Image (cartoon, rainbow, N blue to C red):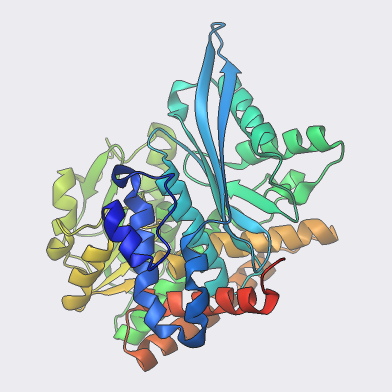
Length: 435
C-alpha cells in the first residue's frame, strides 16, 4: 500500500509524515484490517481514527561499548499504540530486520489482542534493530540495559510492561527488570513479564502462547468437524510457539508432517517424532540435520498436503504469491501478522478457515497478565491453576469471536477486530477527550 492510498483509507485525516511510502509494510496491513471493520462499528465509528494513530512513539539511540573497545550504536523503538483500557503491554524483539512500521503494527495488534481476550491492557511493542547472534553475552547485556534506560521514561508497572518476543527471553527480562529497579531505586517485579520464576515470573508462561494456539485450534477444528487425532499438521517456526503447539497437537494424536525454521525444512508423512525434534533443535539451533525426516526445499513447504497449517515465525509469510498453494483446511496464526490482507481474501475464497493471530496467539499475554497480577499481590498460583485459567479464557474468547463471525457473516479476523475495536473505542468514548 502506498502512502497516498493509506491517507485515503484514513479518511479526511491523512497519516502523519513519519513514515514514507516504502516503509508502511506491516503497518499498512494493519490499516487495511481496521478499514474492513469500520462498517461494523456503528456509532463508535466516529472514534475509529484513534485506532490508526499510535498514542506514543519513542525512537532511541542505544550506544554500547563492544568487547574490543569500539562504540557501536543501535536503533531502538518503543511504541504505545493505545492505553485506553490499561497500561501498554507487548514484547521486545531483537532482530536485524526490525523497523518502525513493524513495531507500530505489532503494538496495534497487541491492542486488538488484549481487548479480544478482555485483559485490562492496551497495546505496546518494542524492538532493537540488531542481529543478537553477532553479540557476545556481555554486549547483549549492555545493549539490553542501555535500551531499558532509554525507554525508562515511558515504561513502568502501571504505564507499559514489556515482555519477551523474537530473540529475547527470561534472561533479557531479568536484565530489564534489574535496570529499571536500579534507575528507580526500588524493585518493581511487575515492570516486565516473562521473567525467571525466581524473580517473580509465572509458572506456565513459557508454554502459554503455544498452549493458546493449541486450545483455539482444537475449538476451531471442532466447529469444522475436523478430528485432531490423525490430523496432518505443518508448522513454520519451531521456537517457543511452534515447538510447544506442535508438541501439544502431537500429544493429542495429530501427525506433525512438516516443519520449517530459519535453518531449513523437513518432512515426514508418517509424522515427525516431536520430542526428538525438540531435543535436536535445542542442541543444534534449528531443524536442519534432523536425521529422522526428509529434507524439504523451503519453497515446497507451502505445497505440503495437510489439514492444519501453523505459521509461527515472522510476519508476512503467507502472501498473494503463495496463498493459492496452501492445501490446509485451517490456518492457525501462531506468529504476529503472518498473513497479508490480500492472502486473507484468497484463503477465504478457498474456504480455508484462518484463526487469526489476535486471538490464536493471545495465550502468552494472558499468562503475562496472570504474572503481573501475581507480582502485585505477591501470591503465586500453581501451574495447574494457571493452565486451567488460560484455557477457560481462550475458549470463552474464541466462542465470542466465532459467534460474531457467524452472526455477521464475516471472517474470524474481522470478527475478532469487531469485538476488540468495540471494547477499545467504547472505553475511549467513556473516557472522553482531555482537556
